[in-house]
Image (cartoon, rainbow, N blue to C red; front, side, top):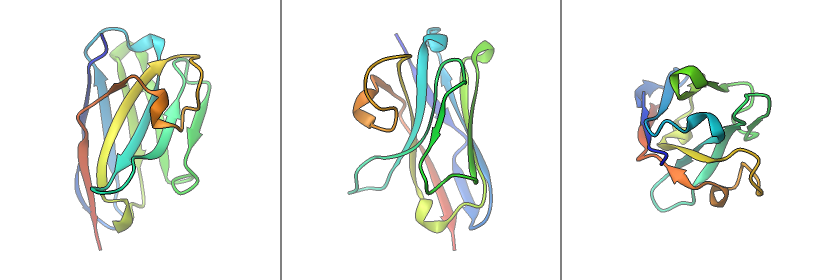
Length: 126
């Protein structure tokens, strides 16, 4: 069973940085591709970034390319999202998610994922 817990959210000024972390306490981390999504209340969940279990395949939403970096440490059962140059419109709850590596479906589609964390709030003030 995959159990995901996000941390690292907070309040920063626009242009600031945060590093989110997602821990899998279920000890099955290495078999899963991981994704980061964000959601504003009343809006659909939005894809941010995804990484295969080997780390060899990485995807980003166009809006975050060049500013956000996804990475993972399988030995520590963690995936990270380094966010630089944050914008006020990126204020949202950020979620990590897991899906069996190699499963059908796009990693940018939230419906592809089987497991979700509880989310961590990120706010960038203008």
